[in-house]
Length: 366
Ligand SMILES: Nc1ncnc2c1ncn2[C@@H]1O[C@H](COP(=O)(O)OP(=O)(O)OP(=O)(O)O)[C@@H](O)[C@H]1O
Image (cartoon, rainbow, N blue to C red; front, top):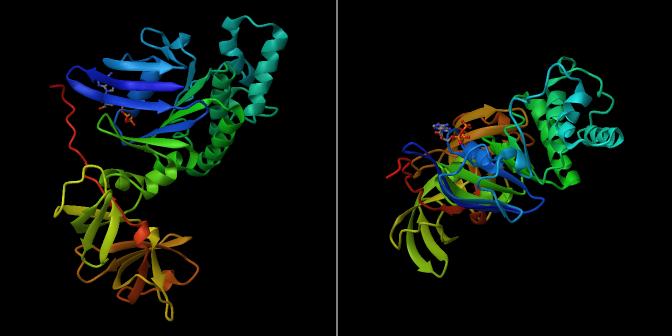
C-alpha cells in the first residue's frame, strides 16, 4: 500500500531521515515510534507530501508520489492540534472538505452523517467547537479526515493533547474505528504504550533511521538492541560473554543466570565477545515460602515503590553489578516486603533476550 524506498531528507547538512525503507500493508495500523527528533514526523510529512525527500521514493497504491502535491495524494492527515474551525459547527466542520467535490446536498449530508456515526459524535452535529470537550474536538478532526474517504489516514500524535484517562479511552476507540473503516492508518507517537496498544506493526526510529520493525509483542519481547529494549519499557541489562556458536544460536555465560542458549542478535561480534542480555522486570517473579522454581536466584530488597496495582522492587543480588528491577502485582504481599528482606526470585530463560549492538549514527551529511 505504502512503499518507502531508501528515503533520506537533509536539512542543509543535517540528516533528518537517513535511507529509510519500509512497506505498509493495505488496512494496516502502522506506528512510527521514537524519541523527539528521531525523524518520525518528517517521515509522516513526506508521505503526506508536505516534505519532499532529498533522495529515495515513496509509492502509495503503486503510484510514485514524487511531485504529487498533498491535496492530490490519496491520504489525509490528522494533526496534534486538531485544527477545526471555531466559527463552524460540527457538521459544517466535517462537511468543509467535501465542498470542493460538489456533491448533491443529499450525498453530502449522508457522508457527514456517516462520519459522525463512525466517530460516535451522535447528536452533537449542531454544537460549536467551544461547546465540545477535547476528546470530542479530536473526534471532529478525525471525522473531517474520514469523510474524504482517504486510502490512508496519517495521524501526527493525535491524542497527545488529551489527559491520560481520555487518551486511553480514545486509543481503544481509534483501534476499533480503524478496524471498522478498514483504512490504512499511519500513526506518529513517542508514547510506547500507545504504539503497543494500537498497532499491527511498529517501526522504532532513532537518529533518522529505522531500528526495528515488528509486531508490538515481538518488539517488546524480542527487541533487537539495547536502545530499542530501553525505549519500549523497563529492562534489566546483564553482562554476559559468548562462549560458543551453533548456527543461529549462541552459548552465553552469565554471572548469576547460568549458561544460556540464545538466538544470535544482529550485529553479533564473534566468539568470546562481551554481550548484553535483557529481561523485563515483570518476567522476574517473587517466590514465597514453600514455592520452588527450576531457575531461581536469591537477593535482598534494596528499594520498593508502591504503584497501587503493582509494586516495583529493586533487588540486590550478590555478584551482579546492578540491582534487578521487578514488577509484582499486589495480590500476594510484595507491597509489604521490608527493605533488606531476603527474597528468592524465579526467572524464565525463554524470557531473556540477547541484545545486539546499537550502531552509532552520524547525522551530518558527509
Ligand atoms: N524544516 C526544518 N529545518 C531544519 N531542521 C528540521 C526541519 N524540520 C525538522 N528538522 C530536524 O529534523 C529532525 C527530525 O525532526 P522530526 O520533526 O521529524 O522529529 P520527530 O521525531 O518527529 O520529533 P518530535 O517528536 O519532537 O516532533 C529534528 O532534529 C529536527 O530539528
